[in-house]
Image 1 (cartoon, rainbow, N blue to C red):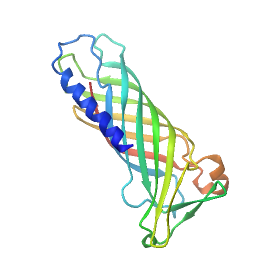
Image 2: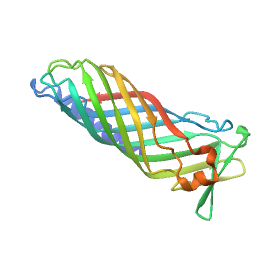
Image 3: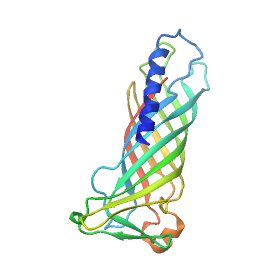
Length: 226
């Protein structure tokens, strides 16, 4: 998944370099290719749940820019992209007869790896304001909206001196959504994502109600081109 995203990014950078030689267009559109790097955390957890090591997300996609005004600096954006996320923590998932159970591990020295990874198709919707002009490629922007996504693959990896295994098709709500805010100047933009829907599905929550409100929170950098 990471290799595919890097390949798409290389293609988009090539398109961006080519676009700089084009003539000025008074009906321009901005910020239609995005690439994001995030630090991941999980909210509303039981007190004995903890993340360890570094959890991250990488995403890339296309957002169609729809300016509303003559200056073309206010409008909306509707897009489609790919995302891959990983979370390292102390919640060990065990598949028993096609039903998942969870065990919280107290001793962090007892395992080397305990994490889940999932890949998503995402559809961002943004309300957009910026200080751009047809000639100015360095401007301020504030974009906020809602991102909806679908988890199309997921797996859990566990590695310890005595045990090593992985599971797929984890007990997540496959459809996720959250608020987004992306703001900054020129290249550097802060990106925030606050999940609205619980991460785990109803079947898992029936056994582990302490995780019923667990949601994602991400903070990082997002880059726009074209």
